[in-house]
Length: 262
Image (cartoon, rainbow, N blue to C red; front, side, top):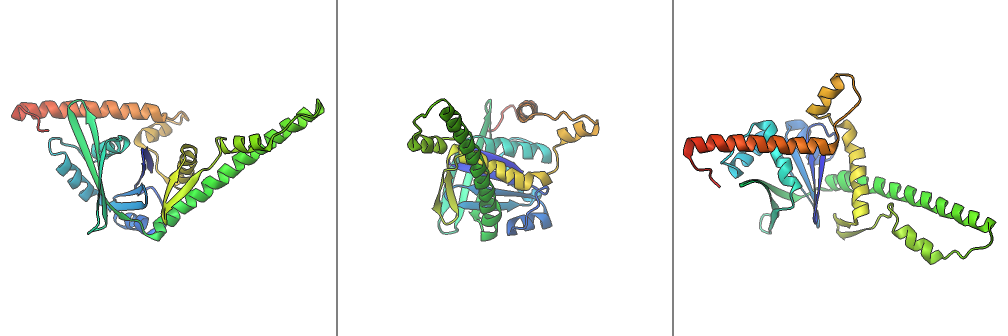
């Protein structure tokens, strides 16, 4: 499972390694493929079998040639970029989002055609993580409360000191654990940056432990060492690999036709 926080939109990408009992995940577990969950003003989902995902990606990027593994990595690159076009079709109730990722003069695209999530998805992927995040926020604020009360107690040993409840309340609200959110619709939400981090961490706690390690991590674990690649290192390697493959495909294309289609 991977989480892509964007401006005004969060995308969750789920594969076969994520075990969940919601209706969308049960579909993925029975037929395989990829599940996308979009958190915007509401929650939207789309499930794609691998064959359909590959066909869509090739149709959107006819100038390039990819295998299954590089296709998935390129989809992730598109999801990480904030360049996107959104459209809602009221007639079909489909929320379409086109993501774009540019490398040099080559533009890669990925499109999602999502529908409103059923209640089981909202329960598993919104309410449950929110509950965990709220618990973590409460735990952090209680730790802060204990720390401030101890400071007050220590201060009293050196004489009475003014202790403003307004200052304390303001500190609590601005603490890293403060969980500020509001529901914008029956199944949508807007989170503060701190709350979004707690929500993402709670989601990973719920689903990531069941996820399979990446190929790079499998190679390292098989050697018996405990050192794992950091996210930043893996991300840099992905970008370098993508640029090499794009350059290779571009050169091959130019040799065949002399022109790279845009």
